[in-house]
Image (tube, helix red, strand yellow):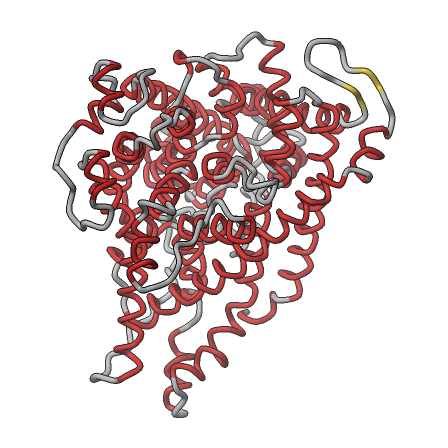
Length: 316
Length: 299
């Protein structure tokens, strides 16, 4: 489902932000203490699973079996990560409770990076072009075509997956990275809607000035409009990147072999390859961290911007 | 929340040719990967199709079969059960988190923390909790056992599996939903709370008399959006229970996937997809009704 964010107002416009609600400041009260406790509890439930995964990934499988409740890593080791990254021989891996068939998470990491980068780059760029045409160019049928695109928001992505698979198969793109990326490469109605909203708010004077300087509309798009839209484009890009990185269902349909396997699919396979002796929890949690870490880092870089931009677009 | 009006007409020649170039890639994507598959999905639902031989028109056969398929109704029931638990808990928790954040602190660090699980894929979230809730080794069951209760096979028990999966997805999505509601809360003027306070209202009373009535339209949108997302559950089921035990978590999307890619019944799978689409469209219509009905509250 599309992320919902508010287009940030362009720097030159003078819209007033809704006044922030001032936090209530009072002395100690039972209610406030209870409220803070509840919030603390929520933070704990949110974050503790991450610690537990790290602790497990740094333990040995034997250690996990012997001491499942130890709050610290049992027999501190990096072997879980070595297994996930294919740095261990099959014998070694089996001896430590892993599966013999080595999965190479470097490769899946690279595949995920390629697919997500391709989708984000192309989708945002093409959507921005279309959004510009809808917001700033004058042509016949503009509003009708835009209405058609908006109607596309009503079709849940999941409905298009099966027919899109049939199409990708007919194009002989099954089991390729391009096949995974292609359906999301050109646009999403949401991205177009989101960027159009922002472009509409850019004052016409800015463009008029550039026109007077003799700049064409193409030049204006690249030199004036896009630079002014850095913030919303960046926000949208980060959210799109996260969405495509986390996608599982579609890559699962399209990818069959190592060459086109992305992290989410590889993780599920790692889980399914459970050795007879029991799940390789140490290796599996290490792989989970490898899959999750890039998004955590990405988010850490843009957190403030993203957090404050989640809101409503006015889609009703 | 209003849609800005389109640019004022300027008396100059149109940009038809340029617009065609700018719109071309998006139009291609729209036609080929959105409109065409939508129409084709509906068409395939009236055919017998196994990917290898051309689709063969069979009229309403797939729909007749669907209506008489107990597994279909079972999986629809399981899906609805999942949605009810998932949305019920998630909306309540998200509302609580949003109100706590609004009334206690404006910290964006806290908001960032609350959003963190949303950055994980469903697959990662599923695996994380699969491990924590493992019957023998999971810390969750270690704690339950230490408290003197019997260990609970959360994902291997027919009764527990769906609620457990529903709650795993609450963990992943609640922060995002909370921030959506938080954004709605920001639009409520502070004067309202000041005025209520002057009248001596408690926080509890303010929540029911100020926050809830003014938040209603936002809540309606959030609710419908999350319900639609919730109906599409697949990933978490695929990695934690694979539809089991004994079809207890065979949600609709999982059954559709199995029909298409396990039994190569693309026609039947498409018919079930259409059924899901109808359900989701009905919910969308409901969304319009509800938001229109609730629009007057905040000018």
